[in-house]
Image (cartoon, rainbow, N blue to C red):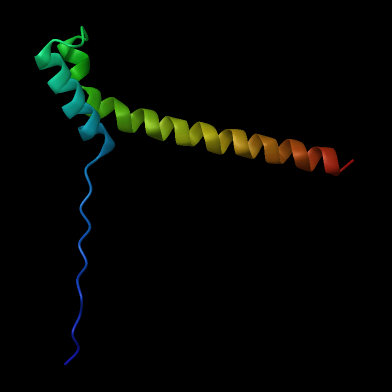
Length: 73
């Protein structure tokens, strides 16, 4: 019989961490942010991370095209 090892990884999403921090700060009265933005932070953080990654990929690609164009002359 073969024994298999199962490895489980647990992670807490970045949006959830930001949500918890903002929620606690809002309850303590430390921030004047609207409850709307506090409660939607778990949506917007992953969207911003995705858009930032896409922007970095675009910039890297544009730099590579410029370098290729410069060296092909």
